[in-house]
Amino acid sequence: MKPPLSEEATDRSLYPRLAARLPLGVIGRAFYPFHSLGSTQDIAGRLAAEGAPEGTVVVADYQTRGRGRLGRSWSAEARANLLVSVLLRPQVPLARLPQLSLVAAVACAEAIREFSGLAVGIQWPNDLLFAGRKVAGILSESTMRSGKIDYAVVGIGVNVNQADFPGEIRDTATSLALELGTRVDREGLLDALLSALDRWYRVFAGEGGGFPPVRDAWRRLSVTLGAEVSASGRKGVALDLDEDGALVVLVGSGEQIRVLCGELQ
Ligand code: BTN
View 1 (cartoon, rainbow, N blue to C red):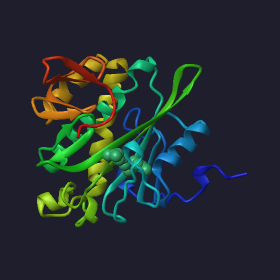
View 2: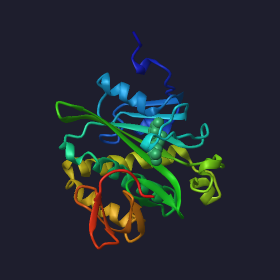
View 3: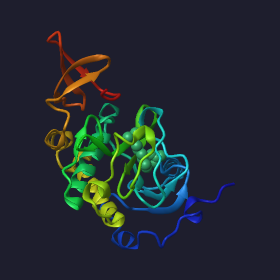
View 4: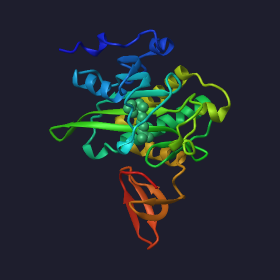
């Protein structure tokens, strides 16, 4: 039998300043920092199955099998970026699940703006861009039980200090350090990120009004609204974020379509 993860390869000396401040509220009730692992998503999922509390955080300096949305891989230089997964157990109807990654996008954008001063924006649904290049991505994966959300693992990858990107994403990705011209304190940024996620998750989960305040913040931070987009094979202008998190697009024929998942081309 595998030993519980708490006895495996975590290194408690990583992120000491942050560890001393946890839990922040809901987020950080358990904390698993790793030097290297396959994917923080897998470890967080395994912890969830072992009964880990909501707010459990898994962070790694390096991933050998990091994954992104839509079946893509997510690679990052060792010790350069933030690679973090957070276990959540939202007690909300299943239909609200897509909103969770928008919550994470708002938290991530706010934290990066506050911590680094870079005015990153959100490209629907949850990519963070600076000057048109991707700085961070979010992957939300969930498990159901009896038609209800059992748990969700929200994975966030932020390009913090990476100085170079592989050929296929060299023109579309950037890092905070490349944009600022100076290295960024990853531990401080992780603290800002988890603190923002703690605030926004509690707003979303009910204490602070549910999704409407998140939607307002998303609209404020969006670089998609008002832009020409191509979604589900149709071109148009992004008009709004609907109450359920769908993107409303005005297409050429004058018709308004709603896009609930996928990405913009
Ligand atoms: C995307 O933009 O495609 C989402 C990228 C999500 C990457 C993060 S890094 C931490 C967590 N672990 C993973 O394997 N993926 C997510």
